Amino acid sequence: MNLIFEFIRYQWLAKNRHGIHSPFVYDLSDKCFKIKREKADEILLQEYESKLKSNNSKIHIQDFGAGSRKMGTERLINKIYKTSSSKGKFGKLLYQLNRHFEFNNVLEFGTSLGIGTLNLHLGNPSSKITSLEACPETHHFTSSQLLNQFSNIKLINQTFDKFLNASQNQKFDFIFIDGHHDGNALLNYLEKLKPIAHSESIFLLDDIRWSQSMCDAWNNIKEDKSYNLTIDLFRMGLISPRPQQQKEHFVVKY
Ligand SMILES: C[S@@+](CC[C@H](N)C(=O)[O-])C[C@H]1O[C@@H](n2cnc3c(N)ncnc32)[C@H](O)[C@@H]1O
View 1: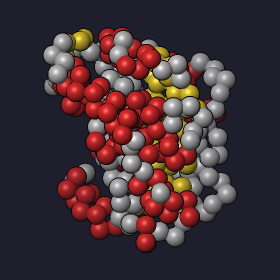
View 2 (view 1 turned 180 degrees about the vertical axis):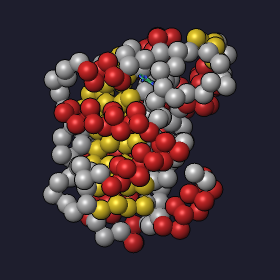
View 3 (view 1 turned 45 degrees about the horizontal axis):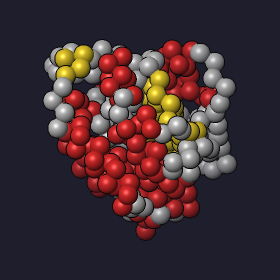
View 4 (view 1 turned 180 degrees about the horizontal axis):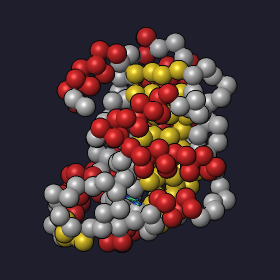
């Protein structure tokens, strides 16, 4: 996979709201993607991010996914923030999606330092968020931070597989898969997530072009008849079963 070529192709194909004829996708582009964070939310996020950026303490990382071997197992908090968090516009996307759709139950695969979790929470504080993190020290660190103040956020120290193999008694409206960026693992998780999702559930998949295997998985997902809606946002892919609509793929500017 040639990332530069992929990016040029994305830019070429990506439509803004004027070129979109699906009401669902038009609303996403015209309303959801234009949502701005409230001032108080922006301040809270900035304060938490500054704390992480200046944190020079080290934690021991246990990797349960397809993480970087080069970075070693002892990592500085500020490095983890820099390399593994949903910063900038992709953090904002999580906020926007939850504000726009007002999801009741949210599931996040991969808590890390909780930047994605915090964006999701601030976007709609009444959502019940479950976030999984297998690395014990990462989970322990994040659990001792800001997120422990919010009763609607449940941080669980568990692998995705263990969670999926246990029976779950709820359905999730929004599922953010942001860990274990391996194509086969992703397809496997999506299959196992089916019983705890519903026809309108929205899945957001991070790093769909992180590797050849992720790219291949994304191409499979686009063809998969289980998801009538697939949207390419370049770094991320958004998919939903939506059986009431015809199968359609969109490349949308974000
Ligand atoms: C990219 S980071 C998550 C970033 C976070 N979602 C955000 O938005 O800031 C991925 C995290 O997933 C965790 N992870 C990877 N594979 C996992 C697995 N199989 N089970 C549970 N956690 C996993 C890693 O330890 C890492 O902390």
